[in-house]
Image (cartoon, rainbow, N blue to C red; front, side, top):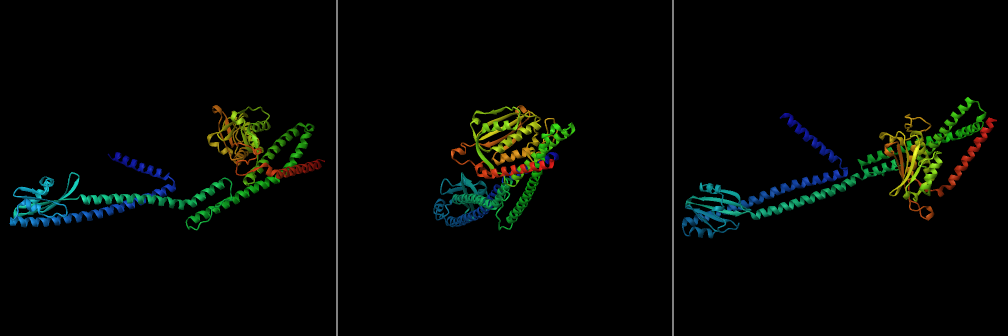
Length: 527
């Protein structure tokens, strides 16, 4: 039996633990509200029980005392009148006063007398009759049908009789029933009031935590300058101050790292431009070089190109980190834009499937960024999936969904989030991880560009479980800017292209001047 009992106890404990876990899965605000409601219910129930018990005891005691006193008083009258034999037994009972509504019953010489037929010998409990007949006064609570009664018996040995009174307790029970209903109603009202008080208190207490949570979401979304308003509360104020200090330290570190990456990238652009120009001059004389220098030149060209791509990617990433990235929104038909982007990204003829409803859809996008997204995904498929096999465009509710498919080794479940991180390197089509000329920033930039548009990007299994399928979604708009209406806010940094036309022209002029200067320097050095 011992193992069975031990198993039963273990199961009971496990059930208690499971119940506690289920309760803890409820939100903190709900738990506070429930705690207030349960506390109010417990306190009100306890007070109701105590009140009901005390009132019941007082009412019953008073009622019983009044009934017993009246019974003894009437018994003395009956005794005196029977001793004088002035009236017969029935007349004596009929002449008794009964302020408590009692029904008198008399036993004398084996004969029973009663005022009413409904309350007589048969209604008196046998044990009460036997006790009084034995010469001992007694009282007893009993029920006749659904009515509570009090029976009082007094022996009258002087006249060889026994006197009984049956007193109804209906009025007392009705009073106690009304009291019980009132106390239950008060307990319910108190419980509801406790629940409302708990809900109000939880909102007030958790409001700073809600502000902290909203600030954390904003910071995670790139708004690093978000802070929580200080509080005077000595407990929650410490939490808010600590959070603000942490956010400030995080902002400072991210901005410092962003400035470092941006400064390094900018410092590398000038010598890299010079090096690129010099290599282009060498490439123009490639046929004049011997075989071994020609091979070295080819390697140098590939490395410089990879290095140039990495610097450009780092500059782009640093703009996102610094919060300087802006969308040059233009209205475009998505089908035409995707076809042009695929054609510009590769010389391979990749099938592009466009659904009928998506063919006429218009989006407001930064064309340069969208072309860069598609180019990066096709390049990623070439590097790691054996080449893109299909580009699919379809409409999903209010979004346009674009997918680039390949038939490579696919992406493991555990890597489907990691590959969008910076400097994450995948496994190429031959199974070599981290090989090729990629720098691990292509997919990270894809996510940044799509997030800036207010969309989302993910990777899933390809058709029939073969290869990988990189998918991104962008919101569609009903009209473009030519319709005379403002575009929807499609991202956290969206501005129209016309607003930055002057800035774009200035940057282009600066780049052209830098390239011209680098060409002149390289020519002088070669001379």
